[in-house]
Length: 219
Image (cartoon, rainbow, N blue to C red; front, side, top):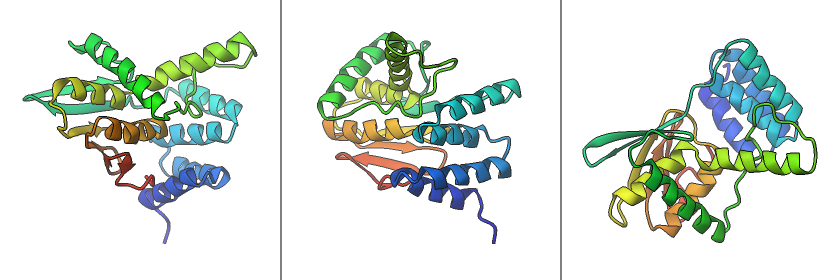
């Protein structure tokens, strides 16, 4: 029986957890061949290259997608609060409470870092990025971190924190797979703020509670 997208996706999750990058690359290449127009698989392959330290390959793959006119589906996180639907994209600017949300984001990131969170920029690729050494490397790292910290899930959680009573569970729907960094950050956030944070991403439910996730870090 030929493995399908679900089976390969589960194996890929195990590869990420155990850092079996070579096998992970092979699995994602199979997914790309099986589903050539699913941009999420191309992004996964790019991320696996980055995790393996193959930044040139990651950049090359993303340039190839741009040249072919294949665009990544933008990640959108959706919440239903106080009778209204609220949607967030990475780097969101249009929400009516966006200034409050970013103030809360600054507070949350500081508290996460005090609790041991380290932004995982390994798979964050900046367009046109290159290593010129020195200040160039520092600036690129800072740019990667800024992009990472404004992912839609983090913004949605911050909106939930300023819009609901303490202890209220937060429910978020994400159209794509949650990234490694957001997964790590929200585990810590659930403990710091004593909140259950439930995210339904493209693959499964993630229930973050007391610093743990219901998926046991396999997704």
